[in-house]
Structure formats: structure tokens, C-alpha cells
Length: 392
Image 1: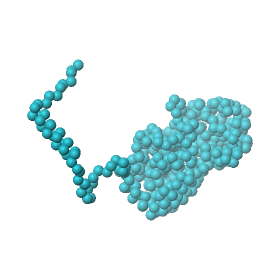
Image 2: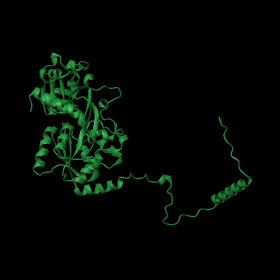
Image 3: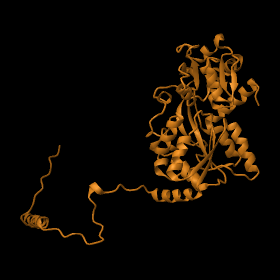
Image 4: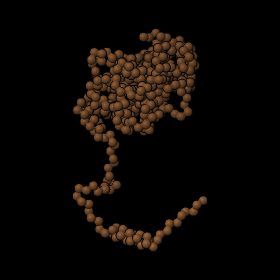
């Protein structure tokens, strides 16, 4: 090991250094003149303002332009019991832009309406929440525009801010169009504990018990709440088992999720599949639904990147649309949205609103859904199951 090399100082160097020290000390002791007027003297740390992000200037200009437009038209095509009205009210208050929201129980209702209107030269909406398969249908028809170029806030596009990275939220292979900002374990199966013991359902095979025949109610087979678990059943057990559960067990089907939950709460059904998270608390606030519990079947666990946001072609309020998509994907926007809709954000700086549905290390999943590649399997299931059940 080499010893540390000493530093030698010559007599001349010492004298020079001594003179320098003396000069520095004299300078330090001398009274300091005040900075000239208008100079940019350093501000004490205690009063220094944090540096603004590089995008702030463009953001301020966009806010002003959106406020001048004064309106955002919004189509919401998810069967949530409690729509994000408070979130939108917060957006209105923050930015001075009123939000006109129209709701649809399913993307199967919104997609043809948009295509029909645009075909007639009517462009009614700026943005839409519509699930991946239907959103990709809009893309294929040229009814939506790329969102990626509209996202300019670096706190939104930061790869490290999102589970699995920011880019993984895009629904299309090109990573340009729809964006899914919710990430969770997909389980929309609920039981009435007056009729089903909590440990009675652990696998798909338990659902095939003859005692449950005619006692289940599911969302429309084309809705994600049903097509997702049905796809998992098909991939794990095959089409025959899927037919046994979704046809031979004689479940009822409905597009009205509130009706599905009501039948469960009132004991008319023992087991349901529905987008029920925001609906059940509403019943419980009225003293109903205390007998309702979510069930996870470990053999068909699915992860989903969902609540997909799309920007419509020829938006009537383009600045408000751009403002909204950047805001809703920010930390503040995600916190407001997920807390109200009881969903879990993909943003890592937003705490889960439903921790039990947040994917955890070590979980094994039948498959993951929410992107163009994985939607192929979901679409295949919808086609097969629709023919089995006899719906168009």
C-alpha cells in the first residue's frame, strides 16, 4: 500500500501564502458596501423562491386559453356508480372551465354514437373515458387524435412517477393514443354473506357448485367486469369451463350495475359480477349492503390498466382538452379522481384508494389486460361468449 504523499511548501510559497491569508483576513474585516441599486444580489436562503418547472410558462398560457374557451365537453363510458363529478367540479373551480359531462353505461353505447355523429360532421366532445377495446375502435375509425404530443408536463411524462413506467399506460402499440391511469387487481365479484360463507368461494370450481345455479348475476358479457374474468377462465380452464360458468349455471345478465348490486344487497342474488366499487358504499350509507363482501378467486387473478382517457377528433375546446389531460394525469388530478371513484392510480406518488386491489409482489395472475396486445384475448372472449349467451 502506498503511503500518502506529503505536500511540501517552499519558503517563497509560504511567504506568498501568508500574504494571501493576510489580504483575505483584511478583506473579511473591512465593512461591506451595499450592493448597487437594481443589482441581482443573492437572496438569503430563507426567502429564496423554489425554481419553477420548465413547463410552467406554457402551462400558464394554456390555462388562460382554456379559461377563454370556458368549457370542456366530456363523455364518460364506464358503469361506475359514483361518477367523478366532484373531481370535475374541482377542475372547474381551479381553472374556470365548466365541464359538460354525458354518461354511458358502456363503451358499446358511446362508440357508435361518436361514429354516427362524426360521420354527420358533428364533433360534440373534447375527451372521453372509454375502455381500451372501444377506444381502439375509435382510433381505427379515425375518430380520436394522438394524446402523446399533447402531454408536455414533465411531472406527468416522468417514467419514474408511474408503476411500470409512464409509457406502459398507453393502450395502443404505437403508444400515442388512449392512456390508462388506473392499475389494480381486477376482481369485481361480490357475495351476499347471508347466503354465501366468506371462505366458500376460492376457485372457479367452487362457482360451479349446483347450489349456485340461477343465483348469480353478471354485467353484460361485453363489459369488462364480465369479459375479464371470463377471459381468465378461458385461458386457464378452456372454453368448456367458461360455458359451464357463464351459460350452464344460468346467471342473469344486465347492463344496469346498480340493479345488479341491488339484487345482491336484497338477497335476490348470492353472487354478482359488476363494476360495483362506488355503488356499494352508497347502499351502505343508507344502512344497506353490510352483508356484501368482495371475493378474489386465486386461480383467475387478473391485473388491469384501465379507465382509459382519449382525445376526440376536432375537439370543440382544444385548449381545455389539453389542459384537462395534463391535469388529470398529474399527482393532484390522480389523487382527486381515484379517491372519488375508489380506484388505484398507477402513479407511485398517489396512495391506493383501495389497497386490497393494488397489485402486490408475489401475486400470480392468469393474465394482464388493458393494452392493444392483451385486448386481443378479451375481444376473442367477448365474441365467443356473446355467441354462447346469444347476444348481438
